[in-house]
Length: 267
Image: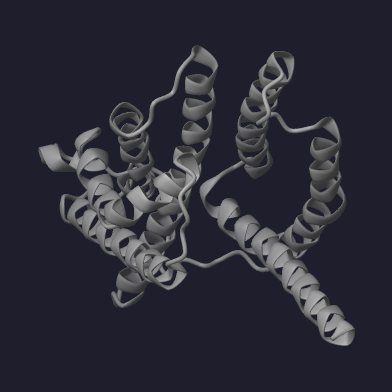
């Protein structure tokens, strides 16, 4: 029994090592294409989420709330991130920087091409409003049970159905992003990358709006501090959800454009 547990923990450890290294390598390879300074982007996002959590935890500690996290837990998580997660990501980033740059099938002109007037559904903010609705709608039913488990202390045990919904969400993000990118390319708009990201990332905005409805319809929070805690955590969850959906949309559009332009034969 003990040997089996040790073997299980060893497999989990090596899976963690491979995942962190793979994330660091893949993220750097894509960041080299889309961003000039990837370190600033990642640091800003991490500082935003960590700062929100720490400020909220300080207020909870001053008020003596049971939901506040002890300083020892915060230090432990910080050490786990700095001593395990971050070094592995840096190791993967090292191999990512040394790896060859992801090649595109066509050459980019030095002078940007003129973008003609676009249809209303291809302009901001309508492309984001339209694109983000379907990924959010694909998880709306399951989202109610997840929110009930988080804030109403109900049991959640349908993990198999959650996996199916997760796959449906990913497929929906891919389809929405590819369709929106194709529509923009048909309109001779070559600046597709940020639109492909926000067309799916706006699902996080819909999630935050859903949290407002859930607060007024299902929760009975009394006092200012519980409402602040609820909004802070839901804002962090909405940002993470939007980044997840937007990343799927951006990567799928990048694969789509490489595929269609790679099939074009230039004499």
